[in-house]
Amino acid sequence: MLFIILLAVVLIGLLTAAIQSTSRPEGSNIDAETLVIRASEVQQYAGELERAVRFIMENGKSESDIRFSHPNANADYDNLSADADPSDQVFSPSGGAAAYRSPPAGVNDGSSWEFYGGTAMPGMGSSAADLIAVLPNVTPEFCERINILNGQNATPTDTGGSAASGANPGDCLNIGALGRFSASQKFYTPANTVDVSSFAQDSNTGAVRAAPQACVQCTLDSKWHFYHVLLAR
View 1 (cartoon, rainbow, N blue to C red):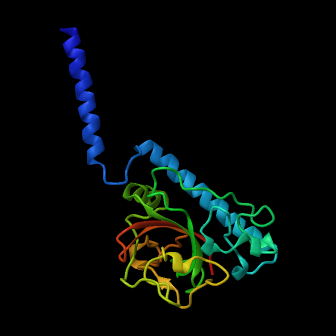
View 2: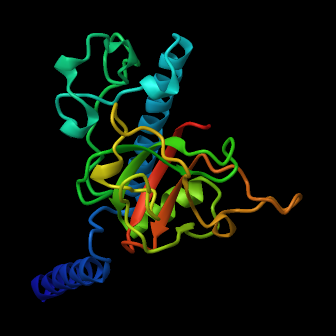
View 3: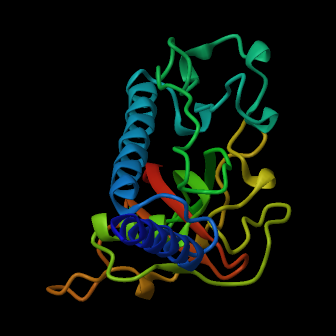
């Protein structure tokens, strides 16, 4: 009898785990506690990238000089061997000295970090495009967690249905291959603008709060993208 009871408990546990697993949205494969840790890791790395950009600027380089070249980065971010002065490179020991890292497992579809100068983020500098790091295609759960950490009451949106083309950054902060920040593609003018009303507002002034970091859903691709402002302009 005891054996039957124990077997029933085990079967109930397995059934519960199966139900919880199948009820999670596609792409969600980490528990709540791990998600908090992963979100912290992403925030810390984004801060590291921002410090690297600041260090390059403080050493006399212009905003247009900044490069994201690395052997593991997409070739669109320029050729390392063609750059005689690595002091403008975020991932070079002679430049920003940031580590080149892959995103933590389970927070997105495995896409690498991207770097763009095509979108003006709320409350950050002027209406000019900011230099931002983007972690594309994050899970809804990660998006919700990171926005809670950033005081966003809901998921901000980037509206519009136009893809990037030529000198137009399109209507999503995750511009894609065309917009990767490089010697040939720097800052877009005019910039893409997000839906400011969908971001957290200052209850005292009624204006949007500065949003140096958040997760945004693009209408263009219906996906969620994390961003962090590396340089406000």
